[in-house]
Length: 400
Image (cartoon, rainbow, N blue to C red; front, side, top):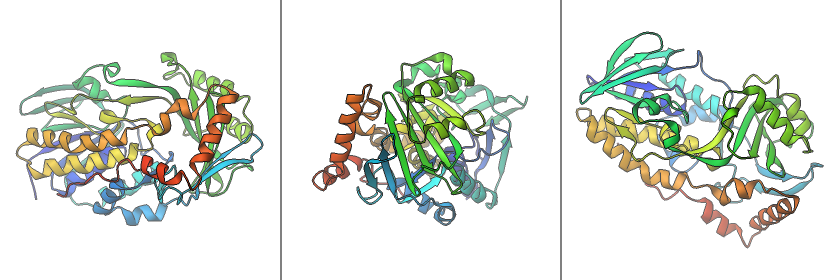
C-alpha cells in the first residue's frame, strides 16, 4: 500500500520507533525527530507479557528480542545483611509478577526496533538532534517549526516524546493540567556488579521512605541500580542533578547491603536518570491533527511496570487505525482512542497500593510490609495474587 500521507513522529524511543516501523511498512512517508544526538543506550529492563508480547510477535520483533533477552529468575527482598526476607520467582504468579518470562533492556529493545526500521524500504526521514518548537494546525494538517530552523507541513503529528512531552504542551496545554504526582521519585543507572548482588535475581532492600535495588544486566560485569524515594514533590529537583544526587545520598545513607556500592558510582554513571513518579491522564488523546502516544499521552509511571506494554500496544493500535483509513485521519484517531483506552485503564493500575505500600515510613511499617509480602508468596495466597496481577490478559488485541 502506498499513500500520499506525511506523518511526523516526535520522539525516537520505543513508542515512536514502533509506530514509525508500522507506518513505513504500510507505505506512509514518516519523519522521526529525536532530541538526543544518538540512540540512548542502556536503560532498565522492560518486560513483554500478554498483549505487548502478542504485539511484538505480530510485528516480527521476537527473533531480535530473543538475541538480547535477559535471564532472570525472579525478585528477592533482602535485609541489610543480605539475607533473604522473601522471594518471588518468575513462575510463582504464572509470569505476572515482578519478573516476566521475556525481559530485555530498554536500550536493546530500541535497538531491535531501529534495526527493523533500517531494513524496511520506504520513505523514512530520521533526524537526531532536532525537535518541535511550534505547531500551527488547521483542518487539513499541521505546519511544524523545528529547533533546526526548518518549517514543514504534515498530515499528522504524533507526540511520542515522553512524560514531559513538548508536543503535548504545544497542542493541549501545560503539563500540570494532565499529571498527578504519585508520591515519589525514581533513579536508574549502570554500576559494576556488587559482590553482594544475587546472580540472575532482581534484589531489593528497603529502608524507611527509600529502596535500593540491583538488577542483572546483559553483561554480568555490570548491573542496573534501581532507586525509589517516597517524598513530597519538589519542583526544584527538576534538572538540578547536584540536588538529585544529594537527595539520593541523604536518603540511602542508613541503608545496608549494596547501598555503598551503588552510591560509589553516583557521580560517574554515564546513564544517570532521575525523575518524579507521575501519572498522565488525558481527556482525549488527539487535538485536531496532533495525537499522543506512550508516556506523552498515558504514563502510568514505572511503578506499574507497564510503560513499555502501553507504548507497544498503543503504537500498534495507532498505526493500525491510520492504515485502515489513510484518507480519513480524523476517524482513525477516534478509533485509536476508543481501542487503546480499555487497555490503559487496566495497565495504569498501581499494584499493591502504590508507593505507600512499597515504602513504609517507619521500621515497624517495614516489618509489616515484609510479612505481608512473604504471606503473598505462600501456596494459599498465590492464586489470589495471580488473579490480582493479571490485569491486562483479557484485553483482546484488534487485528489489522
